[in-house]
View 1 (cartoon, rainbow, N blue to C red):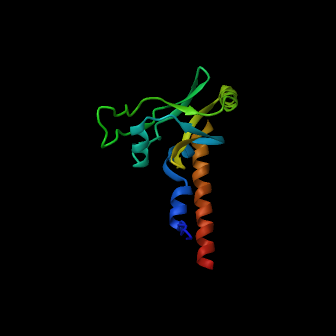
View 2 (view 1 turned 90 degrees about the vertical axis):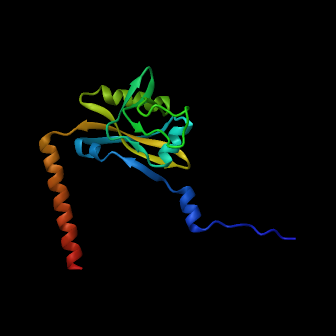
View 3 (view 1 turned 180 degrees about the vertical axis):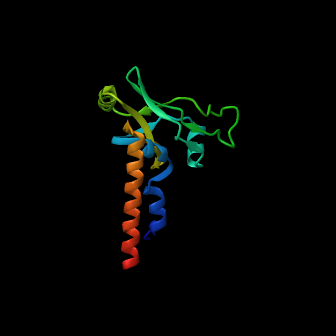
Length: 166
């Protein structure tokens, strides 16, 4: 007797394999030039990952730092899980970021240069695991921000003109 094998629909495959951006730090792109990015895993407790899956996380005030050869995410807020009990987590605790030792050494060398810092750019769920994109960033001056805004406006005007023309 032949067994019927169940095939996944496109929606199921897309749901399982697709990355879901939980939150992004738009302010970082406004305030900094991003030189390079590194994807890092986040060491979480059970209620923290449940809150992230529910979309209750913020990284706009957060930054990353290196302490004793370990990379830490500081200032990220993950709200307490609504169905949690006394085992609920501290929402503002520092969280360890999981990257290779060589990557930490590269980041350490990069931030020792003048004016560079580590900024979280976005929080993503990949295959059920929370990942943070960390950017090595240089601060923008006020005139840099104005130039970026003018460039964005010009690009928008060009796109609008091309769309109206077609």
